[in-house]
Amino acid sequence: MHTMRFQILDVRFWIRVVACLAGPFILFLSPHAVGQVENVPIGNQVYDFLDRMGVKGILPLYSNTAIPLSRKEVADFILRVQEERERLTAADREFLRKFEQEFAHEIHPQVETASILFRDGLDLFSDKEKYLYAYSDSSLTTYIEFLGSFDYRRSSGDSYGSVHATLENHGGRIRGTIKQRLGYFLQATNGTLFGDRAFALSDPRLRSNVKFNDLDSPYFDFTEAYLRADLSWFNLQFGREYSRFGTGYSDRLLLSDNAPVFDFLKLDAHYKSLRFSFIHGSLLPDSTVFAGIPVTEPIGSNKYLAMHRIQLSLFDMLNVSASEMIIYQRYSPEFAYLNPINFYKSSEHSLRDRDNALLDFDVELFPVAGYKVYGSWLIDDIDFSKMGTGWWGNEFGWQGGACITDAAGLANVDAVIEYTRLEPYLYTNRLNGNDYTHNNTGLGHHLPPNSDEWFLQFRYRPMKSLRTLITYIHERHGENIISTGQVIKNVGGDVMQGHRNTDSETAAFLDGNLVRKDHVRLQAIYEPATNFFVTGSYEFQQTYNSSFAQTTNDHLASIKVSVEY
Image (cartoon, rainbow, N blue to C red; front, side):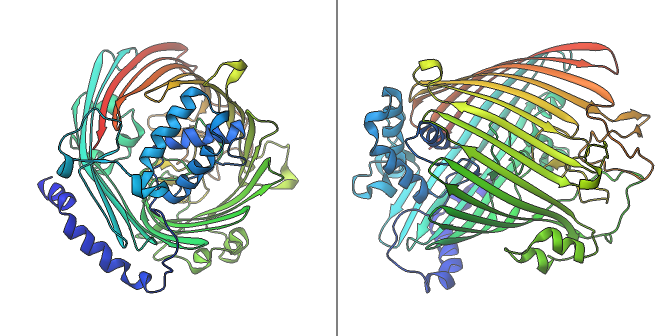
């Protein structure tokens, strides 16, 4: 831990590292563009604000279906919102002023008024953006922040009994831009668990953390780091960073942040109303191998993800997208999947049909100001001749919903209603290791296959320092039937258990052990001073399991204090 802290705070060390890596790129870059080109992390609340502005019609055709965005792009959106200031509610204007300060260096660097600890001393309660250290000149910007959180969680009820878990997490973030063209980002944190380990593992981030699980320790760590080169109308990025692709508010069908972060090479191109993205990443294989699933790749093969996506905006009211993904295993990356514009499914056939190809279509429709209707159709596999027969291999995912701003005439109240359905065997594969997973966790929606979910959420933001959410979720899932650790009836209910030759050729939706869950969740995020957050939540969870013919009730509560300084 001492070594990590020393490296984060040694500014000169990191500037030298980034400058050396950037050198070959900078020689070819134009000096004319301005702004920070590193990305805004996907957890930043500015994305909720921009999405609200998009639905209200203030940012026509703004899409939250592919994030993160660069700080430069986000600043451009904020400038466009400024032009429509008179259409904002009082709370919206407060949020706008907040984000004008957060992105002041990109919008008006000459009036940037951040509070720098190593220059101005401790400044806990102001509305200024806060950093440990900041440096800026015509060639280089560097911002360094301390990250810390203390999270107390408690459960009472039938699943865990009366238990608690406390998570302490600390670390730092360094980011900046070189020559207005090369962005760099490093974020590293270490944490410790105090309390009940089984309850803590209900958190998917901890459940898939290698240090916490494979090393069987109370400690966990997270790291994101990348370089991103802005080459005018397209960008290149290399490193690791959480991303989201897809239309959903409850979760994304295509790519979510449930699984651990992974390393990738990314290309983004944006020209007028057309946007293209390509990702090629390295994944960790699953630790579980199920009997009856053929193994085609040699021991020691690496697991990879390739994805490309094209999005087109039409008629000032419609975004349509198409995406193609491949999960494959080789000793080294496959050249066919390194080609950003190749047709992956056809290439997969020519490579002897040993990989897992998926196809996705998204649509966002803005019929009138204040309303957005959206949907996704994910195709894992399809045989048109067997449509309607119940054949297990027609593996689809559907998601659709609507978002309304200032719902029912209530200022600053947004509503979302969404339905998601994952057919049996979605995300799985008939060959071992080709599941749409990373280190035992699904890359897409958090639901397992053979499930559906209704999601209803109300968001109320009365002021820039307070955000509240009320959420109701109803889930259904058909579990595989297991006896003495063996799957005796495979109904396509486990993302890591593909179809075996001995399994039924038909798969009925919600077959197997039926599990129903209802969640009611209350959440509030209070920001008493810029970059200081207090988050409180309460959730009631009721579960019915048909295999035991019993209902369990659980009460989950948490309070989290976090700082970015």
